[in-house]
Length: 386
Image 1 (spheres, rainbow, N blue to C red):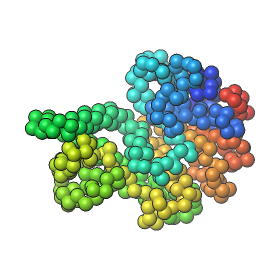
Image 2 (image 1 turned 90 degrees about the horizontal axis):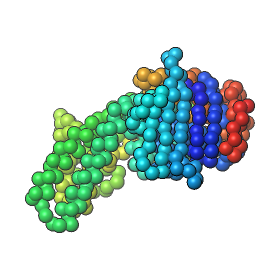
Image 3 (image 1 turned 30 degrees about the vertical axis):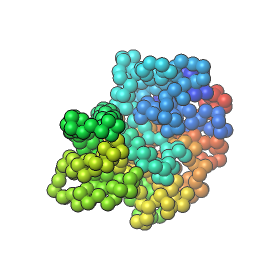
Image 4 (image 1 turned 45 degrees about the vertical axis):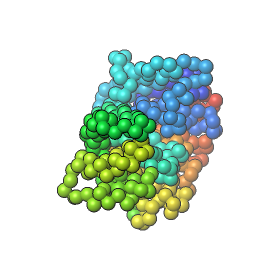
């Protein structure tokens, strides 16, 4: 899949912008703060329904405006498609495909992209929530139906937590605990599917991430990853969970749902005391390792950066292998400035065969020559084809 044209209105620092894009490498050049990242952020939103920089859509709407619009013309398998989304300050967002109205959450069905930016170092060095978001975004890109499963789980979790907080506040147990069991059933059904999908995804990433890391650094440092499941007593957010005998000794013959139910039962009193759900996919994590040591806390800045980059390259490889839409659009935001000459060259070799790559950089000297054929210059929200 390739983007042939991007148009944005009242998005970040752009009143309006039109960018023609080509197959292969596309390079956005401009000094920091001119709007390069805003362009890749807009495309990233179409495939993930979120930003890699902010948590609220309103932050992407230009100051003083009520809405921002992102339009992208896509080409795949001989067909053209127009995908649009309108971000609103008040009221729900709106989306269209070929001028037909769709629900915004359906957008990832039509466009697939993988973005690596400096903020992604937080996936490796940040809290577990960053790693969960990384996995869930990739899950939805591979299987868009999971977006509704994740949303339903979040709603169920909030309802269950509200009920437990009420029980804690009032001291009432009987009827509320009976109602809690109903929410347990729904939480387990939705959560077990999410857990199984994440575990399968981690397994699918093992070979691609080892290969991507080796290509970038030109050395085999044993890049690996392992799921840490709270239903098995491995909750990175809660030291008490590490010593949960019921969870830790779960039978290997149990299903994920059975393990989830057993873990909830084992933590029931603690949950009621704290008014929180202490086990489930919202408490899970992933352990990243190099040479069998955790990346977080042991790896250097360069190793951590290379691991985060390898995660995104591995994600792109999975999507190009599994997605009906073909290659995802690979976007690298201000990446080459962080790499030495050797790693720049190796990264260029690793990405050159993707159908479309979009790169941002402050100076063209940072970019290997084979990636500079189509260059777009940006200054203060003004775009000129180079």
